[in-house]
Image (cartoon, rainbow, N blue to C red; front, top):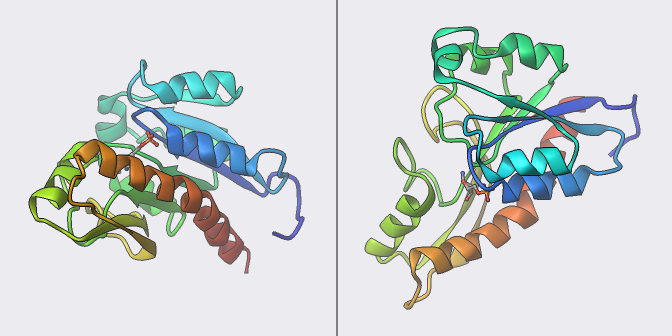
Length: 198
Ligand code: GRF
């Protein structure tokens, strides 16, 4: 990535859970002046990602439904931190229009299956993997996509697959998919950021 001004891209990572993807992204961009993980945004004060933010010394914003959906979607706070790009990494709330319009093509999500299958409202975490197994799919994988106003429907940026094994459980499949997520999500984010510089 070309060395431009310090902290050209200021990322906010939105997450609701353990935050293993957030951690990988933080590690990947550590010490890189052109990308700064500036903010962790979380709707669950006791989520694992909150601890990650503290350990990594990254600002944390805990959000509440009322402001997110019926207020200004925390746009002022994002602006205060000069956020230029948003990464959804296991964030379970729908993104309000206001935010989508404020970050056009500057918001990406990762989904633990091969969209357009196994996406949409309620399709997250183990529900995704259970459905994949119930349907006897031979393969699953990950989809990284832009975020639009519908759950999991934005344009795809990247997909890759892994096998579904005969003796898989939702947990074993989730573990295989996490490996893919951790390897590819930071690299794909980097590529999207480079494209924004053109
Ligand atoms: C990942 O599987 C991601 O695809 C999905 O939520 C999960 C988050 O896991 N959207 P973690 O919190 O990053 O460990």
